[in-house]
Image (cartoon, rainbow, N blue to C red; front, side):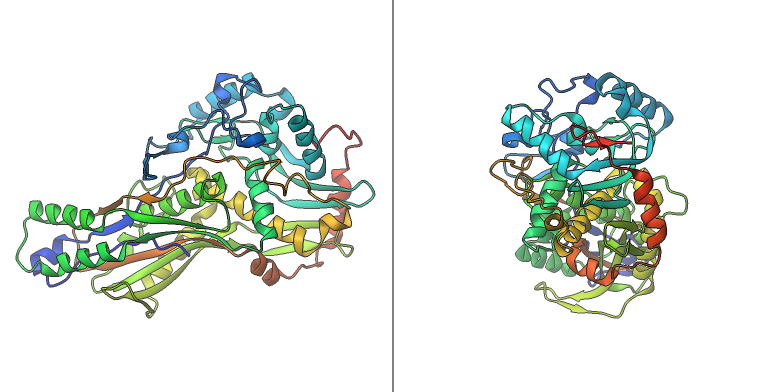
Length: 482
């Protein structure tokens, strides 16, 4: 579970201080692409192993990739501005994709199919020839969501199916679809997810304040007892932020230097920024949690992303599966935290419940406006897929050993600079007395999520029909098709 701490300081402040100050100190972490496809340069596959997995090569990677910067000490900060999703930006993406991708990839497909077995075989051939992965491999033929999983025992194929389109790198280097702006699934995330599932790991991220810094900050806040001017409030606010200092990043279940980890941390960071009113997305009706706070809310609040599926449908013979639901929700819990960092449960407040529900309800729109949320949905799909393959023994039923996918020596994951610390920043608001703390993050317990879903055959006839309509491509050299 993540521990991103936001603290509003009230202490023994005067009435004037209370009216002015709601300081929300938040652990900041922005993570975009580990590396980008540089599609707008038309690089194709020549020297274009951007984040490809052969030997861990990251030809296009840099410390500023995808909107973040990581210095030599592992301190992560924001590097670039907002991502553009207007019509002009999408037109530019379309032009870039046409210059770098085969025309068959650039067309939108409501149901593109990707055979993981054939993909593994195709990747193995490139590795044997000491060639980099192609762009279509790195980004799973533009597949944007896993809606279906089809099993073909006769041919030994395991096929993913869902919407897909052409893709290119946007204004911050994040690879997204050219008409929807939604990021495609990434081959490297798939490999990392499959390996994590084999270890039975619960995937997540956390950002923890240093206890000593936290104690000093609390003491400094309580020491203030005099009236304050706006300038003095701002100075005090900056001092409290300085005292909280750097916070420690922890990643669970996946390598900390992976793109998988960066997406989780960035998504958590974006949620925290929105909660305190920074960089709010243009989503109708969306508000910050800070706007929902009321005087007297003197508790810490914890939010975190968790899987959210309505159901997981299957056929009677377990040869087809369908993922149903929006993939993600935001959970909430209120807590008390003592000066030495000890946590205990508190009565749930309306404002924290309301904001968690607001984010969950708006998540489909947020995933369009904030592409990293769509990437987190993709990671959740991958984690559930990996758990499904393992728990239902799907690979064994196909005599598929996944020798390459599971071998980190032959196929290293694409690695980048490892974020170890983040700076604290905050927000101030003219309001009544508030005490706000936010602890949260991302947690993806794929096994228990799958257990709760309980495979249902209620709609198996419709699902079997979808499998039949998908038709397996008889060309063994083709690992994707429409």
